[in-house]
Image 1 (cartoon, rainbow, N blue to C red):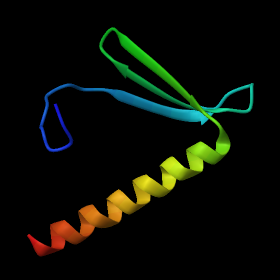
Image 2: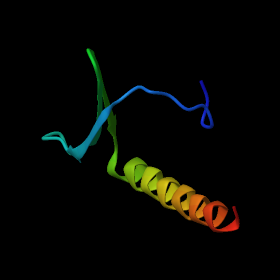
Image 3: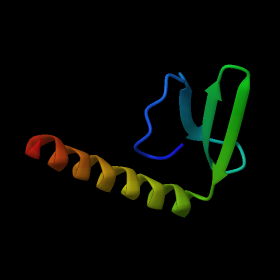
Length: 64
């Protein structure tokens, strides 16, 4: 499965700080739970990548 592969899988995403000073992305899909902890600087880099992807998606949507 890749970025452009559609799926019927439903997942929940929670994002928040931990008591250890990390940023946690918590993905839950059915019986699967995936906690991912990042240093604040890493989380900011991820946020920048998400913003860039959103902008790229907007550009593609207006072209199509």
